[in-house]
Structures are given as structure tokens and as C-alpha cells.
Length: 273
Image (cartoon, rainbow, N blue to C red; front, side, top):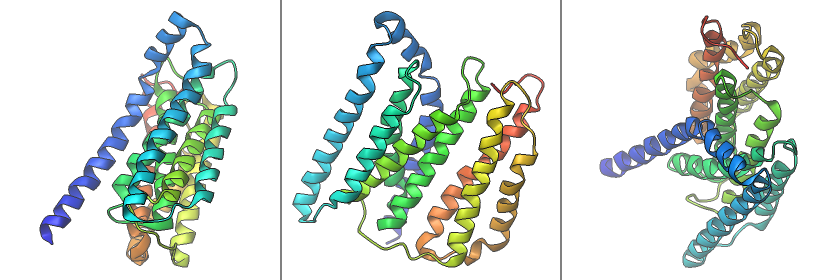
């Protein structure tokens, strides 16, 4: 039993490290995309993002369907269709002058699968789907803030929305295919729901005003709701239900780390673009 627990902990740690590592990797792939655009023109990024999405979905669903047939479990088609619809919307909304942005859908489809793997050792069913989607989306927020700190990149709300659509789309697809987890209902307490809602609202309260401070220093006042959530978490985290506690802790950690960005922009050598 202890050996199994240790193996689960290792897989969880490995999964989360892979998720966190992917974000700076995605941010620094821009020189590669720029080189491909220079070599073959912008047309290459009209074709690559949808092709990458089709290949990823095709391979992923084939593997999962094969697994389901072996386990004799049914596939839930409805969330898969909704997830694919989210991904297609993510391909449509980026600025047509920058078709390279469409690649974010495929990137966050991959990230949502890795996030689901990491969380599947502590969560299952709908809680796994909800919290893996939120965790991957919050990493997408970090992606854009890191780009804002990068001298050759810019912070964008539209790109952040694409990241979220890819994350939620992927999470719905993997949930529908029942990958790496048993089914289960989301039995969250009122405290769980209220805290999670406030946490996500606090992230939005920090993100939205930041768009208007590009080229400036980020102020501290948009971070006040998130600081409040931080204080609440450490005072009452023992009240979260066991079914959702791991997911709440995970999205709390990735949310609270957003508080570093206003601090970083007050350093004299850093400009937020």
C-alpha cells in the first residue's frame, strides 16, 4: 500500500512538473514559429494549427477508444462534441493577421491531457474534469503574463481566451473518453463552491486591468481580491471536502503565484508589454 502511494505521489509530481515546464517552453517557441513564417510565409500557420489539432484529437481518441473497448466501458459522446466545439472556436477567434496564435489550441490540448494525468491519482469523474480544465487554463494565464515580461512578446487577453478554450475543450474530450479515471459526480460543499468561485473571480480581477497597463508598471490594487483568497485559504483550507481538496489546492497554488507579476514589474529592469 505504501509503495502504491509513493508511486502515485511520484506520478503526480512528475505530471505537475511537466505541466509547469511546458509553459516557458511554449513561450520560447516563438523564434521557431517566426522562422517557419519567414521561410514559408504566413500560410503555413493557416494549415499547421488545424492539422495539429486533427492529428492530436485523432491519435488521442483512437488510443482512448481502444482502451475503452478493452475495458468494456462506454464513451460519453456529448462532452467530446462540446470539447471539439470549444477547440474549433479557439481556432477561429485569434486575429487573422496573426494566424500563428491558433497553435495555442493544440498546445493546451496537450497540456490538458498532462494535467488530467497528474490529477487523476487524487480526483475522478467530473471533479477531475473541472479542476484539470481550471488548472490548465490558469497556466495559460501565466503563459500570457510571462509573454508580457518578455521583451519580444506581448500580453494578450484574446490569446488567454484561446488558451482557456483549448484547456476546457481538451478536458471535456478526455472526460468524455473516460481517460485515466472512473466516473464520479461533483459533490462539492458550499464552502468549496464559494471559495473556488471567489478564487477564479480574483484571477479575472487581476488579469483584466493588466491589459491596460502594458508598457507600464502593474499596480497592486487588482491583486487585492486574490490576496483575500490567499488569506482565506490558509485560515480555512481544512474545511474543504475530501473529494475536491486536491483540486482546490492545485488551482490555489497556481493562482496565488500570479501575485508575483505585479511585484516583478516594480523592478527597474523589467517592463510589462
